[in-house]
Length: 109
Length: 115
Image (cartoon, rainbow over all chains, first blue to last red):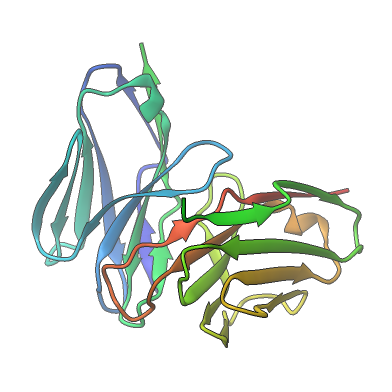
């Protein structure tokens, strides 16, 4: 079966750095996405990785290792508004998006 | 601004009473998706359309139907809602299916309550 694993919940302090990990086992790989979802709202796109390495976009960076089936999302200079769920999703060989259940990130002052 | 719109944002229906959720998009995207998402769970794909080609996920219950009368609009019909169908229903679009880099754009969702 296809599987995406992420921690259920993480807590971090305002101004700090946090890394959210994602491991995947899918039938084929056509890219990995990270989405942010605030409570009661729709997911919004954060980043896309298809090649190994780090993609940086402002305070957010995403890393991919295809050989390890592993990605992480790095959030720097955390702000209270970063409190949200972060969903990892992988496009499989049929270009279908397989979603993780998300990591709820709690930011404390 | 180009966007994905869902109406209503909140819907309350009675057990067994049919309900229709609507989605429209101004992005002119070929692909439209309906997802069901329950609290703290991954979005579950119910259907997707590539243009007018309808694709039903294997485990989508028969109770759920969908229509796409034109590029801009898509509807989700729940014929006989049960208590287990209470969830957030998300509509999403993307410009292409078989292109790995194209992300999905989501509407704000419709939260369905079944009483």
